[in-house]
Image (cartoon, rainbow, N blue to C red; front, top):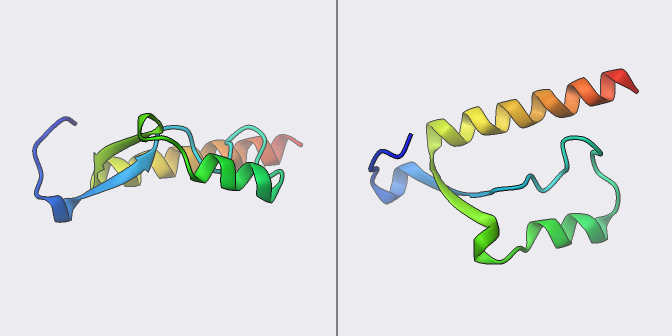
Length: 68
């Protein structure tokens, strides 16, 4: 949304989900590697946009699981 928010109303988000939406959880090594990324792999989102992004990622994972 690119609006301005107080610090309490934003979160730091992984640009690429920690648990891949297409492959799900594979290994702890992959999980840790995806969790601890450089700053370029993170973004600041308002809480509302983060909630929406997370919901989309969960839906994608659910759709992939249901097809397998």
